[in-house]
Amino acid sequence: MKPRVVFMGTPEFAVPSLEAIVDLGYEVLVVTQPDRPVGRKRVLTPSPVKQRALELALPVMQPERVRDEASVEALRSFAPDLMVTAAYGQILPKRVLAIARVGAVNVHASLLPRWRGAAPIHRAIMAGDKQTGVTLMEMVQALDAGPMIEARAIPIQPTDTMGTLHDKLAKLGAEICRDVLPLYLAGERTATPQDEDQVTYANKIEREDELLQWTASAVEVERHVRALSPSPGATAVLADGQAMKVWKAALVSDTPSTDVGVGTKTSRGLLVRCGEGALLLEEVQPAGKRRMAARDWLAGVHGETVVFQKGRHE
Image 1: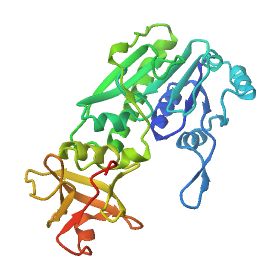
Image 2: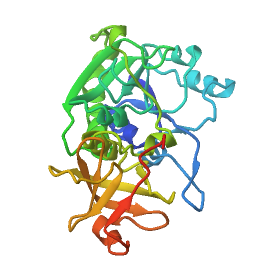
Image 3: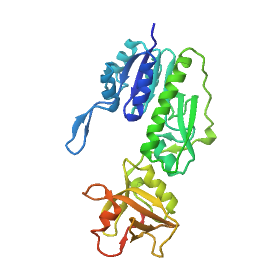
Image 4: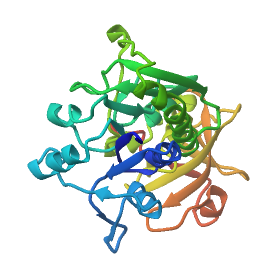
């Protein structure tokens, strides 16, 4: 008899893990978030996991609250051997975690116990971590605190953005599911408790986290730009209060003799003085406009300098 797996996931990150579980030949019930309005026209749109599940002809549940009685009964009636979650987006109560015969496991995009929480990929790049990875862990009530079944690491490259690193980790999560879940279901893998002394938290990215702090070093600002690309995007605020997105920036060896937060026009883009060093803005998006090369935007800017607000505390 084929193992029965409840897969809970919502965004693109979860799709490769779902595909890996289907490739294992398991019988799968997919649980994902309800369709949500997307874009300026607020078009009701299914999650990436739902879209892929329908393509694979899998049954799909979309409860507003997975803890409600109807949802719990539907999961019980499926009689799963295992529950696998990957960025599902809802907290699971004990009675849901207890439904599967073997247990419930989570695919998390960090090397736990570092970066528990909602934004591990963003935070790893912001912090300048040299490596990250994916951890498969048993689920408990505390946030990302369960014993670890498997952890695999990859380096963070100096050019990695949140987008490129996300895709690498999604693929790595799928590899772990493919390699480890059969062993775990067979009772051939044990879990190791996390070291609580090494815990860090990856808090959700809030609006104020998007603001660039020019008083920080150029190295830190450049990491911030990469960590927020392609979503939600790093924001620089001009002296007049107009906000613009910064999508691509590069570290440079020369530091202009301007004040912090002042950018100088160059043939390559806008060279902005930071608290330490300077950063070359190469791709930007002024408010209400498309993404463009910084030099193209500068062609319409009067004067030789551009002044930014230094950051959120100015």
